[in-house]
Image 1: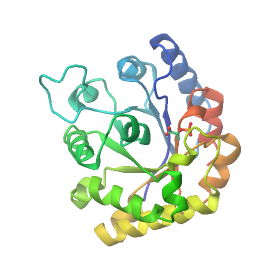
Image 2: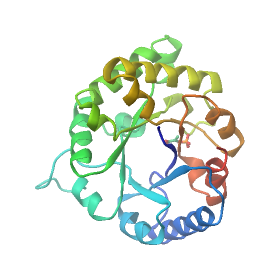
Image 3: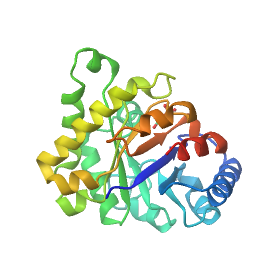
Image 4: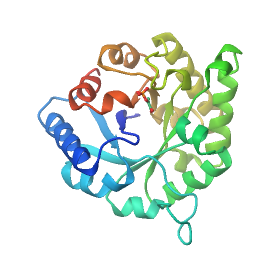
Length: 251
Ligand code: PEP
């Protein structure tokens, strides 16, 4: 059965020193709190990965927030999936809306990143979600379906089994506006139905689908109570250990 996951996305925040401190605080809380069978992940900037992996124990997985779309070579400034793997990290967040919007990440580029992530034994946390205009035009289901199909449906069922999905309506990211519990469940159920059509019931039921977008301790419980919401991808609220823990313990 699918795993419940709460993953933090620190984005471009925290110096190395601050990141080590925050990871230590989260680790202490996770070690000393009864957690209801939830996988905890922290997504840090590249330069933190090695040190944060040393600070956290077995109960926390570490994620990069991106990886290169090439294996190795003359790509100045890029970080490959195999380099990420060598830090002890387990996940790579891919296709975040900020990368799609500010860095021109297309589904075509994402296919290469997904493949390299999987080839290196890392699990992609693959982000999908519509912008406000698309929701207002009632195109949100179509948009999300095509992001999933174009970014992931080249994978075999076995490969797809390693993918975590994160539905993040772009209008809810960092805005303080959260999708309502009903809106989240409606989209998550649609995503699962889309997976059933492509890979069958078993793969679809085993896929964790996270919600992201202004999720915080005060609204996490209501979101996570939905049958198809298997956890969260958390931006702002993952930068304070107590808030992040408040979301983890919302299950
Ligand atoms: C995110 O960037 O993945 C995110 C969900 O951000 P926030 O929680 O701050 O809306």
